[in-house]
Length: 83
Image 1: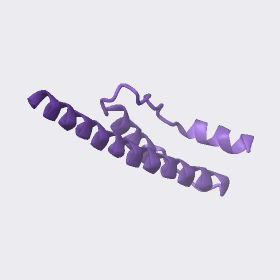
Image 2 (image 1 turned 90 degrees about the horizontal axis):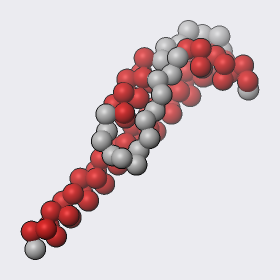
Image 3 (image 1 turned 180 degrees about the vertical axis):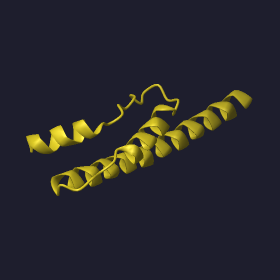
Image 4 (image 1 turned 60 degrees about the vertical axis):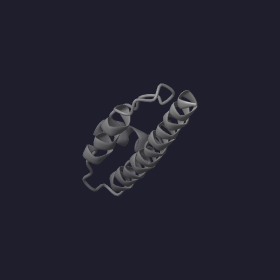
């Protein structure tokens, strides 16, 4: 029985970690969109918040979550130019 309880606990922990990942990933996307909008308007923008969240995502220890790249200002500018 203890193995069964351990598996349930492990699955619950993974689910909680995955939910944390989803929230952080959504927050990262929101920060990227904000930077894109500022760039489109010709206003100054920063990628600091994006990369802080990216680093938190990359520290999550689930094998099926791919790592995310840090975003540079140049990446945002290139994206805006292509649109």
